[in-house]
Length: 112
Image (tube, rainbow, N blue to C red; front, top):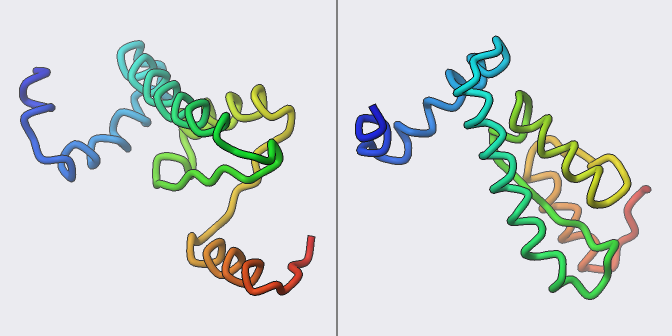
């Protein structure tokens, strides 16, 4: 079974995400383990970049469909709350965030 999954192209593997998330939400122990491990890998990425930030309040941006909703998103949010002692702010479309960063860089204040 493992070879069947990992022998596929990444796009095919990505399509399994909603299936695994639904199985995890239904209580399947293997799916729950997969989603917990996925969340831990994403949180390790955050831990890897945090020391390089000169300002501990600097935003760390994470993006991807797996972070919108579901068991991986829930576990990542919990992990971020534990690490930063505050709830993560969720943005909608990435273009909005990019526009905000561009405006800030140009010296335009943004509403808080």
